[in-house]
Length: 85
Image (cartoon, rainbow, N blue to C red):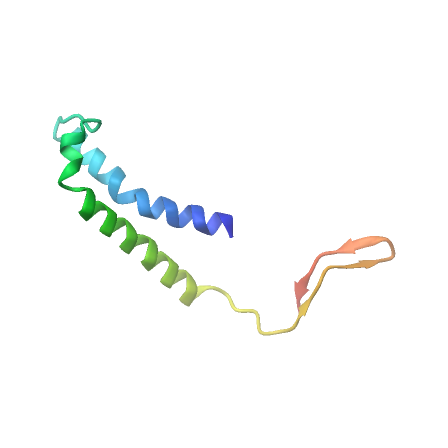
């Protein structure tokens, strides 16, 4: 679950990174706050759209397990991890 959240977080910050690269290409300082003030709302909306779209695509394309879940158990002193049958 943590890996999925980090993936969506990276997608959220993708528009900010692209905008920073754009500022560098235009020979402007990406650390100057004046360049970011006008674009912050647009970048947040674009980042949220990327993250939400990734959640939707992941939800649609994720593998579904249809069998019953066998919980973790102990057999002959060994722990057998949980699995779907």
